[in-house]
Amino acid sequence: MITKLPESSGANIGFLIHGKLTDGDYRQTLIPVLEEAIKSEGRIRLLLKMDNFEGWTPLGAWDEFINWPKFQSIERIAIIVDENWHDLATWLFEVFAIIAHIEIKFFDKDRLLGGWAWIKK
Image (cartoon, rainbow, N blue to C red):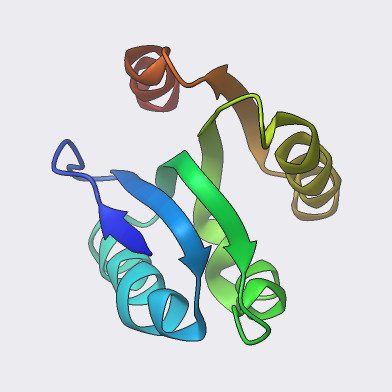
């Protein structure tokens, strides 16, 4: 499940990612919010708070998300993770950062405010 965080504003968009992601999460929540922000702001910055993340369903749209044509409009991504997903999330997003040229930084789950501060700078 993906939920837009209430602290989101302007070019700084945050999401809580909880449980197992589905294709609907991607298509109905994530992409519409990002596209609206890009339309109004041009370039955006993301914060992804992973909470009890369980991965993706088979049609969880991960491939579509990382190949999304507007991904170049993302300047940086702060990822808030717990120790259960730190290694996998680090590997996935660092590989992606190299390919997409997006600045990505990881924060422990108790550093949410630090993640927001980093994407806003």
